[in-house]
Amino acid sequence: GDSVTQMEGPVTLSEEAFLTINCTYTATGYPSLFWYVQYPGEGLQLLLKATKADDKGSNKGFEATYRKETTSFHLEKGSVQVSDSAVYFCALVNNNAGNMLTFGGGTRLMVKP
Amino acid sequence: DTEVTQTPKHLVMGMTNKKSLKCEQHMGHRAMYWYKQKAKKPPELMFVYSYEKLSINESVPSRFSPECPNSSLLNLHLHALQPEDSALYLCASSQGQGAYQPQHFGDGTRLSIL
Image 1 (tube, helix red, strand yellow):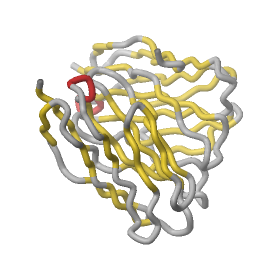
Image 2 (cartoon, rainbow over the protein chains, first blue to last red):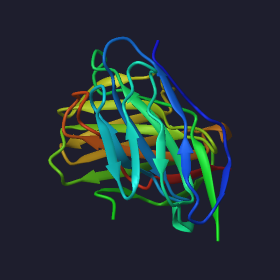
Image 3 (cartoon, rainbow over the protein chains, first blue to last red):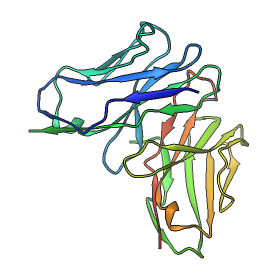
């Protein structure tokens, strides 16, 4: 079946540091890929998405590129802020399976001033 | 601000109580979802409604009973819950059930079973 693997956290960075959170997936066909963010005490918010190979999703300074050759969708940000502290979930939807999200385990990011 | 509204935000109930969780969206979405999320884990899908009809039940115990009264509302009726049912319950909606249509989540109801 489909699966998503994320780097385990927590990831602790200083403000203005460069962020990478690794995400790799296993799926048949051509899935759509997503990053969701969950701030403390809140639900999940869609951060960015990519629906086909080589697409780059971007939002709020975050970027991720759909790499079919490496089955990856790594999340990056050039300069993190304290307000970026949250849990980040990588997820996929298999185009052959309706709109069912398969989530990775989540990565907690802590940014210190 | 989230466009999917869930009430209540917090709920404490005993194992013999009956309560309901509510979810509302006014984005014209025709698919709605219930998820359960335990601490430090990703959400787990419970139910999917498409065009007000239950389309997926992920083998959820019958003490959880979903209801979709209309295209904007989704309820989750709770009865005789167990302590292990304590979790964050998230509602989500999407335009439809196509793979390119992202799900939008509410802030959840944090449920504690005494």
